[in-house]
Image (cartoon, rainbow, N blue to C red; front, side, top):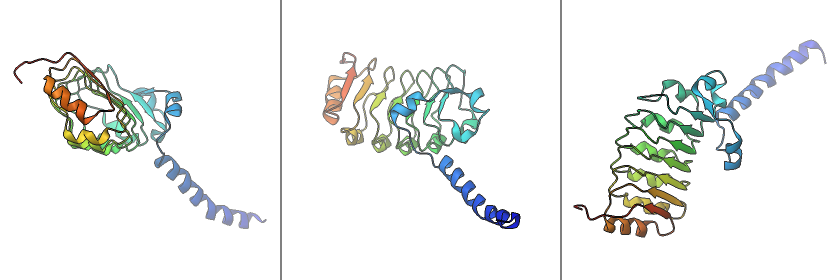
Length: 208
């Protein structure tokens, strides 16, 4: 093959090869749990030094953050995010930009509510929201068909949305300790999720 023919051949196949390579990175699928557990969790400083499409696990804990850094929204293939022990005052709606997110930890912050965009995180398996200022959860949580563990202990949640019943087959465990709740509400939640292991603190008759 002459150089001219070789260059012509490469000119035709290289763009396609590059396109396929980029597409594979952009459209990365959610990892199996065993594979995700083996991936190193990066700090923000470490993540900003590599290809953003290769950031899969990110830790922002104990950074005294009031909001999530804008830079993280470049990590399109993010699958685990730990933003615990900060000073976050809201749950970012833009979190839905992470279609493969499986693990989300926003515990020990100052978040008062969760937006409906939570329901767009359809790959989510673990959701940790303990020790915030939540009073309710959105009905869209019922869209999280792969959710297996929900942690909301230490909030002010008085009830769960009735739609959570749709997760009865997948949701294995909920931690609802340190939440003042009536015996009647405990009963309702158990009826909604009969196959789910639910951790309650002792119920109270405290003005409900």
